[in-house]
Length: 336
Image (cartoon, rainbow, N blue to C red; front, side, top):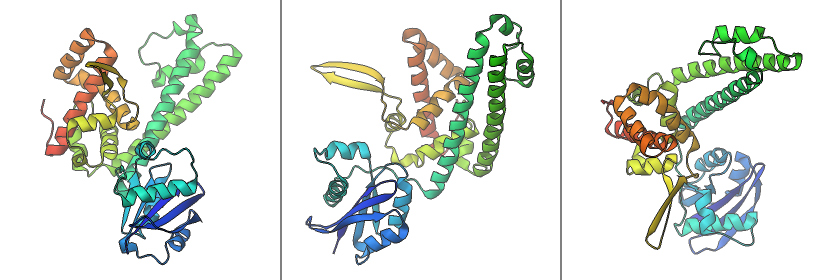
């Protein structure tokens, strides 16, 4: 007998509902987030004829892997789209798991892509590096803000890179009031620690991506270095799941929102429901790309004059993503 399992996954426990093809509920109940508890809840049901579904919420990978060891098929539901289909006035764990099981048996689950375990490991490493880089940028901005309060002191530094070794030594000796001196010393200590952590993560990632031919192809694209290339590969995973470059643009959030009514079309800001890490990577790659590639520079300058620098930046990021799509799809290097 074919059975369907809906799992409402939480931080410390989950609620499950098991039903038949006709919609008859065979079992429901709460169980602990533990592989033994999952096995106990599904005990007595043939795993080969059992399908399960859970939403792509926080830490979904844990429950997904447990279910994958026990049932024939596990579907990861897109939480935003499921909510649009099954909006309920009364909401609790029992109702949520039941709705998921009903949608699964009716083949109405809007599924999310499930990356391989290896890709998930690389993705976690890359996202940690991205977090460290963002904190480092915040720290540098705070240092700039502090020094800008003292124009006379700031004017003593005439070189370009304030955060070079010489620049940090100068900041250690700069004459500041006692309170701001303590703050600046603390910020510089944090910055040096973050620099060390970022360098360490880059060494780890370099070992991970050393033998990946796809990464070598991506690095032939201007603006795509080892870390950005690995992040793109980890977030895209399999380029074959995107039917066209436009689908990949939408996934990365590099397309504008559109509202059409009464024959009039309005375009707004870029879409917010997207892979924010992939969008960040593509936007970060724009500046080094236009410095290296004359064609991309012409494309950016033309749009910046006609519209705005921000619009030109997003459009150039979108073109870079199209190049990435072609390189991965056709399995070849990039030639300008």
